[in-house]
Amino acid sequence: PAFSLLGSYHDPVFGEFDASFYTQIRLSGDNPDFGDVNTIVIDSFVLALEYRGHYGKKGDQTIEVYELTEDLYLDSTYYSFETKTTQLTNLVQGTGVFNLDDEATTVVGGDTVLPQLRIPIDTNLARVLIIEAMSGSGTFADNDAFNSYFKGLHIKTNNGVQAPGEGGVFHFNITDPDSKLTIYYHQAGEQKEFDFYINSYCADYNHVNIDYTGTKVETVANNIAAGQVEYYAQCYGARAVVEFQGINNIPKKAVIQKAVLELPVKYQTGSDYTTGSTVTVTTYLENDPYQLYSLGTIGTYNDFDKSFTIDLREYVQAVVNGELKHLGVVISPALFNTSVERIIFNGPDADMKKKPKLTILYTEF
Image 1 (cartoon, helix red, strand yellow):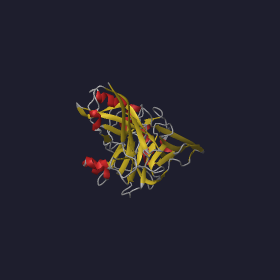
Image 2 (image 1 turned 30 degrees about the horizontal axis):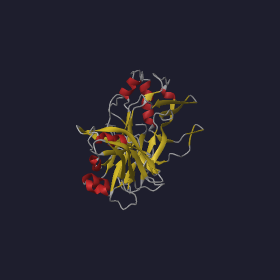
Image 3 (image 1 turned 90 degrees about the vertical axis):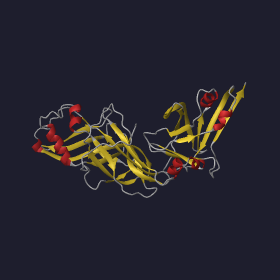
Image 4 (image 1 turned 90 degrees about the horizontal axis):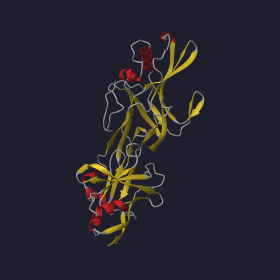
């Protein structure tokens, strides 16, 4: 994913959404020499995460950080429902309550930088790491050795029960140079610091929990007929499926000149729960219903019309030619594994002014 996600919120339609992430950290230099550890006074230990946007509302959330006890591997595949084992001790110092705001002014060392979430970490861990570096064990010899010793972090929230409309999920660019774990200390009157990097060489992935229990989304998933009123798509969760069996009645010798699918949505400009600007369009393959096949087109959102428009000419032509069987068009938010966007589509029986529509122009030979 392009961004790491952190936060939780209670969507009034889609239910509870909770996001955390796992990541390795790396040395800023092999075999760091801290000198006489007995002369070191640790001032602070800070995990800095650079903001890259949010979904939902800004405000207070309780954050926890845990040390991993299970390895991560850069060349492995991880699913958003996977969990990794950690130590039991929460490493965050203080109450852990932070006002999450991706527009807040952040000053580091007298310099104003792009907005960051700065989490104070237990300074006892910083001392343990410094002592280990100077122990001669070889764990700080290179990053492979270090990641075997210190496997990484799980950064999560613990917000308890949230009321509908409360909370938000925040996007972080953890591979930015300003996203790092830093020991600030002084030694013999000199201020010093040592960084642990989070970069593209670190394995990381987002962990997401979505609870649709008792929601309209669950109703449609269990009863397709309910989707005639409204139907849904959400990053990391639900995908919308649109079927229009009438295309099977188009003459087999027809040449499709135009096929435009318009999918109006239920959305008020300025809402905390935006639709996003783009959706991807896929379909199922008849011989493998568990795989999605890209149709090579996207849907774009027009805020004036409150609708996504999708060019399906090539798809409809392929169905008419018998190259594809119409099993439904699958609509997903374009940033499916990166964002938290969700969409409420108007069904054909919605009490809204605009309904979904497929317009086809063809020439018959």
